[in-house]
Length: 276
Image: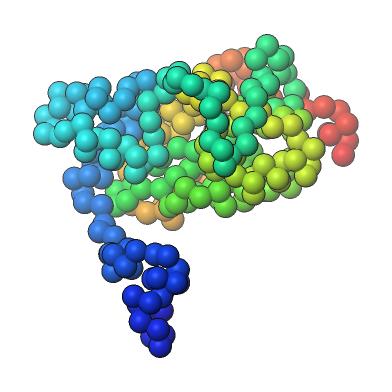
């Protein structure tokens, strides 16, 4: 946006664009190896105790011999995009810039594929850096329909995954997510509304409303990510491609009587969609 080769000075360009000059000259420093290891351990603690905030995570780290303060833990958690999961006060006060939708799955019987899809984002640690994984899952069968990796938390990679899932498997009746800005963004919700897909959203802090995809993250990390310690996004993408094939087509699910998610998806797909 700022062009140092332009005839206008950098100061003048900043004034016209209403930008701070310090932001132009600032160079983002890379994440240190120490911080990367701390973030990895924070992720593991958060996965086991999702209701832990920065104070309790700090206590856990200190008990493991790390000399770290709560402010540092809070800063790293913000960078990772995670927070304690608990019912917060004033839940009805939505952000004025984002449209929120009610949670529609409470008491709903979901037994057929493509009745309800759900999506979420999780932090993925790497040997040198980190990225984010977004996945879309069929609720009834637990089958992962599509997924994407990104090194930023914008909505574009979520939209890409949504379009791929719809292209491959058609449209669900209901799409459920949390209230993250990636899913409340117009680019995402407009895509759903234009296809007459009903939008459902978890209550803020209600991680149990999306329990099945929370369980998926635990499986992905303990069965692949933590074991492999991938060094780059290219390696993560290659590894997860193989893992999700295994998860969908070979991994027996204990709730499905020795059936894989892919088997359950095909068995419970409405006949009209099978014929199509």
